[in-house]
Length: 202
Image (cartoon, rainbow, N blue to C red; front, side, top):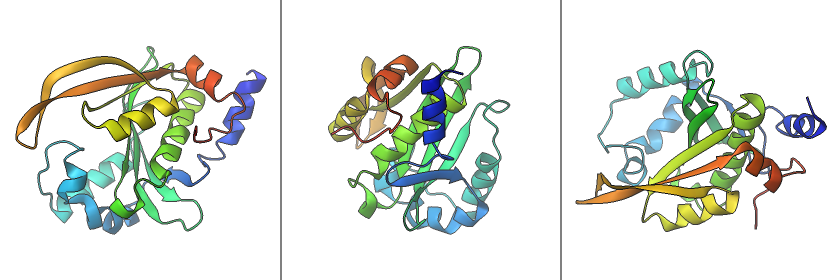
């Protein structure tokens, strides 16, 4: 294990960033999730905006909270505010492929009042650290709506690169829209954050 790897691994401090901490999801998070889950503002970016019952979310939460990334290919974590420990949302690594060492990632900040304050960016940086330094992944990618310019700018600041466009694959707001694919490699992440601080790039 080289010095840079050791330093960055230690910096994660069980997944702590400048503003947030990523921790295991618990069944006690159910009420916080339900506060905002059945809102169009959130769900339009998380797949078909279908209203879900408490029972459905409870079963889903039980399933994702016990997923093992090596056996199940997924890792879901709660995002909480570091100072207050308030629940903010969910960070995820999905469809983890070994031995190819790649995965899809995503961050969802549930409370709209907490968006645009740097929590999502900080959570993404910590999640990338988990993927690259804990799971040993080489490539992490995401997708976003092609007209989601605000998020695209944040992803590019973090270090993601545009690698392709799936044309008219998503039906949203009465129209078919394209899905932009972006990715970042471990070597690019290490080069951009060599000191292991994973600070929000200004």
